[in-house]
Image (cartoon, rainbow, N blue to C red):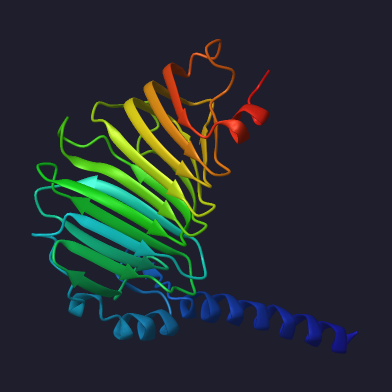
Amino acid sequence: MKKNIIFLTASILLLWLAYIVIKPLNGEVFIDPKTNKPKDFVSAFIQKLDQSNEIDNPSLEDIKHIKLIGGEKQAFVYIEYSDTAKITELINNRLSKYNYKKTKDSLIINLNQKNYVNINIVLNPNQEYSLTLDKLKGGLRLNPGDSSTLGFTTLNLSNNSSLRAYNSSRENQYFFKPISLNIEGKSKIELENIRLSSLNVKLNNGLFVLENTGTIDSLNADLQGLSNIIVGKYPEDKRVKSLALTGDLDYYNKRKPK
């Protein structure tokens, strides 16, 4: 009986140590809200290793084209607007240094992450940008922005990218600016909880899906190769008010709702 009690006590102690040690080792620092100091010695150690204040992110002053190359895990991209444009990468809720290359007005970021990563992109609403996602799987949270003509206007998906794009607010906000979308290389995108005034889509071996919570006033789509769009049964389905399709429609026609 005593051996069982000792074994049970040791097991509980081991689980407790695993909780307070392994969790902080994942990069999480637990802070006591009363003292504003780390709760345990491992959190204190991780906090000392944190060099986020020394991270020097690239300037986006002359950047118009941003490309993210995905890694092993999913990435979640957040787009916001401010007068000060910048891009930050967070892994386990901590700022992380990323590899990038500047070429004229383009910025290429190679994630190559082995963990789930958040990419916060803050854009100047008075400048026009394009965003390319290459080999990237995850989510894209959009913001209508402060301008009806500039800001984020073009999204490119390539090399088997898979994306769920949605509105940054729970409310179904309206995106006034026209957006261009290019999908190729077996990539796909799903739009949900979003209202667009105008969307121009070019697909080459790609898939575009408009979920039940999304609406588009005017949708123009050019399909090439094995490409398809799923928007419900048009025109009975009111998610799209005006739909114009061009290109090679054989693959689409075989799969559209009857």
